[in-house]
Length: 339
Figure: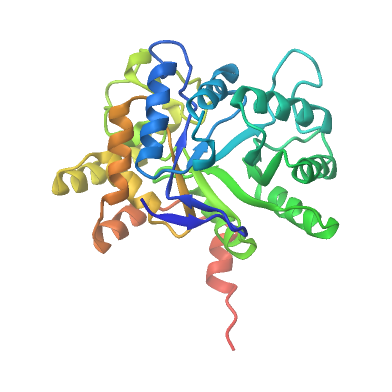
């Protein structure tokens, strides 16, 4: 296991993190509590030190499972959870208002059986709440020792940049980490965020590294998954990020063909090829794995020891390159300055 510095901080995180979105879901879709605890213990055993959850995962059940599993092991990991989405029927039981943040953080701490969070994420942009209100609430939590670092997820680039600028102007703690979807089939964050993360020293932790399982190679173009046992793509709505309609495109199937060819050359799985490409990207600090079973965890962990040739990495990058769009195309061609 290798480790990297997380953004503009002194935290050091393992190159893969353990995601817990599957923990506590009903049978057939997720990981039962006992097996989830085994996954957590195995992850720590091999040197993983970054565990990611959220208060909405399995209605809070994932946090409870993580809290129980970390008894006696809390100091060995960096623990992160999130706030933003609805926790109840009331108008104030969602969003990034001070009211909801304070309610949510204490509920998460109780479920996780801990006194503090290493990283607390704003799970998504809130168009209703003034950003200053949200940032001040997070700063108060840092000062109170409830959270140690701030993270942001699923913001537009200007949202994140405004948050960093406001924090700097007020002398508040700034976000050091960001979670975004990033994989061989979802590279659009490169349009804006590559420069932003680098210049502002924000560490990227990637979710959906296998595109909801699409890059595992277990799906076929002519056979749409229908049952929960067929994997995550079978349970997603058309509007979801991991929806079959988003994944099953001609471009993605062409990409998967190349991934399978490389996998066959090395005698490894398509998933290992996809994860190896991702963890090698300069943008990436840590890849959030989302295993449902111990077998999936072991296979994903094997990617940390897998190497691909420069030609194979270049081919994967070339065939998965996002559409060349304006103004990025214009800036690349005409925006250079030389001395």
